[in-house]
Amino acid sequence: MVTGSGASSLAMANANSQKVRRSFSSKSCEHRESEEDGGDTMTMFEVFNGNRREKIVLQRLIVIARLPRHLADRTELGAHYEKLNFQLRKQYIWDHMTGLLVIYPSCLLHVIESSREVLLSVLKDLEDIRQQPDRALLEAPKVVFMAHNPRRRLFQQWSYKVLNADQGAVDAGTKGLEEEEEEEESTETLVCTVLSALQKLGGHLETAQKALPGSLLDDTPDLIVSQEVLDKLLARDDLLTPQQHLQMYDSPLNLSTDFGQVIRSSSLTRV
Image 1 (tube, rainbow, N blue to C red):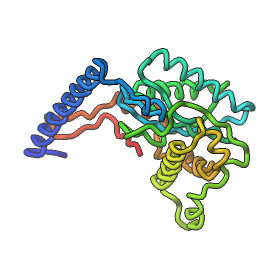
Image 2: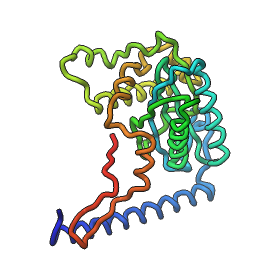
Image 3: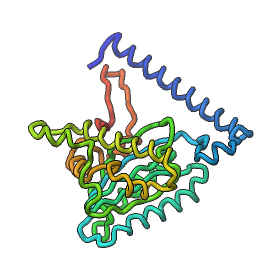
Image 4: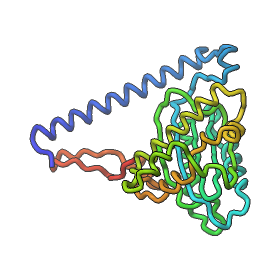
């Protein structure tokens, strides 16, 4: 309950935040226009090293999901996302999509880097798959993390890797956690384990001579996020589903000063 001067402060804060958003939007448009006027020229050094000056506000989405038992050929998942990537490239010409899909024996880890529109399309596709139980390629998808405007991309292109049964079974980053059997790992700890492994993989890709992360994972299996960590995350109820994550974009913060109350149209939170 907020009354008196508290309600006035909230109203002023809301007005200020709207001004900031308008200012940011205006600056973003001006920045894009300056690039289109010739500011996006790249040097040969940038091209050779796979660097790019973004024409979008970059976002990074990390999702996980279980694989259905009836899925005999796991490459079907890779083919599905290759097709989706091709469709999104035609729809969003400037919104280059990069990332990595790692397909484990019983689950998957998918990292997608692109614009907000592309990431929302991937989430909607996950929801469409979930609503097709007879021929679903995955089950119980969950959003692990979404980064807004990261400093750089972890991957320079999109690719997928199908792991063997013995790959991803052990992760050096979780050995210390396994020793603490009495205390259950928090969701935050598990998410940080995933993020740390992906950052290490991205760092190795910058210095390695290999074009795709798949071959690097074969040579350096300790960079693979363990399937055990992903299984634990899939069992957590505090991670959002794609549907819940999409609902957040349609549920803005509403301030009601008439009754001196702050009403949020959705109480959903994200890690």
